[in-house]
Length: 115
Length: 113
Image (cartoon, chains in turn blue, brown):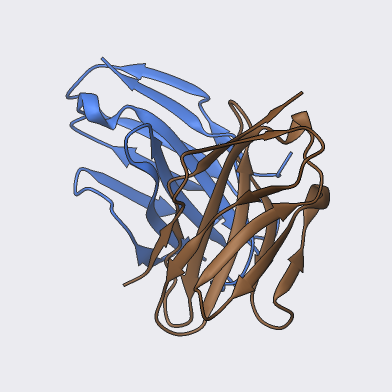
């Protein structure tokens, strides 16, 4: 158990809908990362937050947004969902400094299925 | 721009034999290199990383990796494979001056009994 929690585990929704994925980092970690894992595109870095502020952005679509709250949990909002958004979404956290050489600890993921 | 390549989609090895999972990278500045493993229906687990220092890095479960700057490689190795090592292995790279992590496409390791 990495100490990173993600809810829900599974999510089934329809095209055009909006969903929110939630992540709680390990105790003491200030950085949260979001990744999308799909069969055809592997593991894609979406976005990183550090202590409530956006720090780095990857291949995140404009329909997607994220935030990190004062209690350090993070939410990833996916809107106007398309079939191609079906994937496993992972959250990871890293140690307080949030430096690029720190180990990331991954949650179990949220499996999203868009029908 | 950063990139990382895992040239093999799948590696098959017999139990007890040595295994190698390949990774090459491209990054500006000093590279920070990582290996993670993913078991079915689980999140990624950290195995080992290279930040600086000794080119041979030892990690969890008997795995090790060698950083080769001239060949820009960071291959994962284990002297004697176990069936329980069968999983999906990801190499990742980051670099000084960036906060972005780039993961490889993953290599599925299958250890045959």
